[in-house]
Image 1: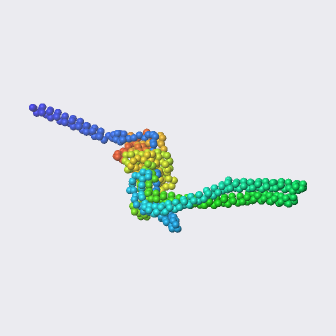
Image 2 (image 1 turned 180 degrees about the horizontal axis):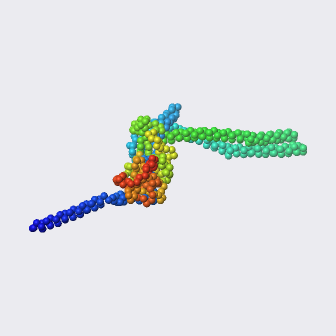
Image 3 (image 1 turned 120 degrees about the vertical axis):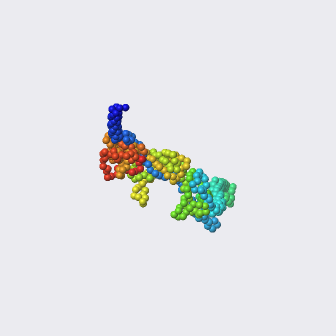
Length: 487
């Protein structure tokens, strides 16, 4: 190759190198320019529209499971004293616990919970049974005497008195007949004397016999009148008085027998109460009292009215929940609820509010006041127990056509609730005021407008470099931390 042709090749090579270098420089320049051109905000952040919608807010609160029907079982033995043949026997209303069912047992109505020593009451019962038998015999005797007295009155009124009356009437009738007969004979004798056929002595005898007949008639009439006006009424009253006395004795014996029978029934009940049975189905809890060093166990002495067991009915359960004073006015009877029991995972229960306390409860550690609310469970699932921890969600009044954003769009910064509003040239941090909310959406009462877009999960996104405009945060807190489901 000649020097001239080699020089041309060298020049061509140099020109190609310069051209390629220029293209490379231009390409690098364009690449650099493309790399620093910012993408639109809508492409760099997940955004959500501010829009109007219907919300169904709910209030959440913690609570504990209790039974709506929680029976307190006490020692029902009583101090009883009886008299037996001048001696006084008593059982002092106390006994020894011989056996007791284990705490936490599930029982049915009529199951034996505990057995107390009944020996003292059984002895009193035996003595009282003998006393009752004696009282019953005295009562039967008094009843017989009363019946006899009643029969005596009836016998006199319907028998003896009527016979005496008839006897007196018969005697008066006979006396009257004799008096009339002697009156006729005296009249005949007097006529015969006038005719000379009868002597004066005969007339005198007839006169005397007539006088005797008149006297006899008057005696019978007087005796009859005496019987009817005096003897019969006096005898009747005497017999009736015997009836009154026999009746009083019978009433006394009846009252005495009733009193002894009542005491017998009470002693029988005391013996029966020494075997303590479940009044309904439930869950046994011992009524221990650590302050008084009382622990329910075999061998302890129990006394009258001492608390022994609590028996919650597991078929009738409720949740006692604490409602913050700022939101208690939002809760009313009848509101529907959802309940989750910590001891029954993945199980949602339904219920309704049955009561809200009128007076708040307080603790010495804080000045915050809470009101107890009762939520009745529609059904009691197997495995539920009193004392379990529960979470209650109370459905509040629906919010119609309100401005709302997803809950992930609201951040809590410097004690305030804020949203990051997307614009073409960047983001604007804006304070917002919240109304009520649900688990997914929050009501915006102030700070945003319909149609705007806000950043989702601003805490996870690097939004500080894109803030082009920012409204100052107010000094006051805008969120009522009252337990709404806004998370």
